Image 1 (cartoon, rainbow, N blue to C red):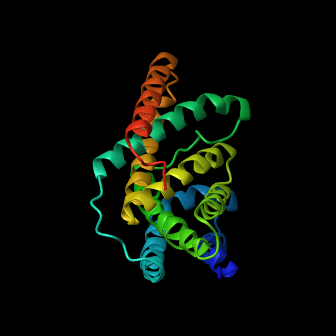
Image 2: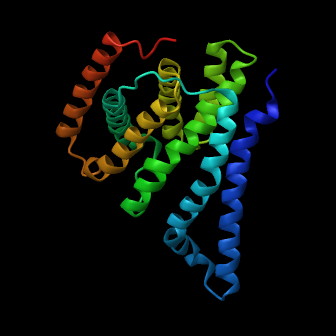
Length: 241
């Protein structure tokens, strides 16, 4: 039987731990006589340390817990295909989201973080933690009680909700399904990790070009990626379990 606490355990611990780190930094910053209004800028200088601390602590723990559910199969993974799929999905999402963003007026495209830090935290460490947590542990826990599709729906909705921003939630809903299908296809957590990394890294590198707002180029890329996605869907079984 599915353990309800097991489903929320890791996300809850993950967010509480990060909150505590930020709280301790803020307490130290303010207690040293610094202006509280400058804390956000100070926090940016410490982001890489927070990211590395979280990675060092959580990745080994998540791997250990994940291995209780499933042993990765020795199915040959087509890494090139997964990287291409991740790039395609990211480009489609970001071009759509960028122009749709004008209607919602969100801060999705106001990220001024250091590129290297963003690549490490969002492009590399984030996908490892999220895939182990959601596809590796939560999804496998839900499969103990529910049929595949119900487990997929619950996992994906949960994964989407934690992204908070409405545009990111929409993308997380879409890619959440695909990440599970990839996991089921290869029976190996490395597969969705690679796709997730490719998508996030593409987003990080593509945004500075996209925000130049060249509509013709962006629209051309969008159409090409849609065609490629249709081809991928037609000639692979990635969307079937």
